[in-house]
Amino acid sequence: MGCGMKPAGVRRYRKSRQSRGPVFKIAEEKNIYAGTDKTPAEQRVPIAGFEKLWVWQKAHALMLAVHQFCRGLTREETRRDRDQIERSSASVCDNIAEGHGAYYYNDKIKGFCIARKEAGETQNHVRTLCGKSFLNLKRADEWVLAYEEVIRGINGFIRYVRDKKSRKP
Image 1: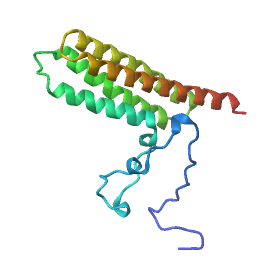
Image 2: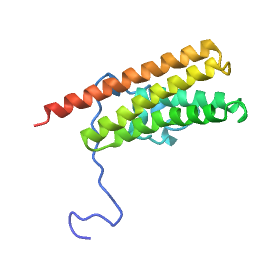
Image 3: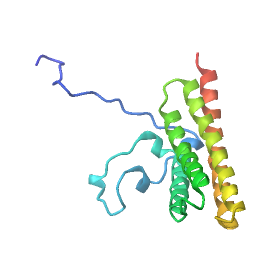
């Protein structure tokens, strides 16, 4: 190897810039790394960038709660409704991750707009399950309010990206 050359397979990585703004608020350190709280800090592995967004964390926690609830339902009870709410709740997280990972501003905005629509759809499915007496009113209200908070976070991220896009020379 000559001067300035690196061995095959070795790549240089840039240090990522810390994100700013309320939507990019980084979660507490225990959530930044994969693994349980019992895992020593030296053995923890950094997680993907979108997982540091509080809006993704909130949407992911809601998705897990919805899926956990749906496990208790039999397929015969709510065949179509169960499938729809599971898919729409998972799609919120997927589209937040997709929007965060997009390179171009318009692709970021598009991903987050789809996530916002899916969050609204999930709210509707929660109300449907509540109306059919499969879900109690208290839990339904909690989930609808939590998804409303996710929608506000998504709106904040869209506003941030649009402002950043408009300032671009």
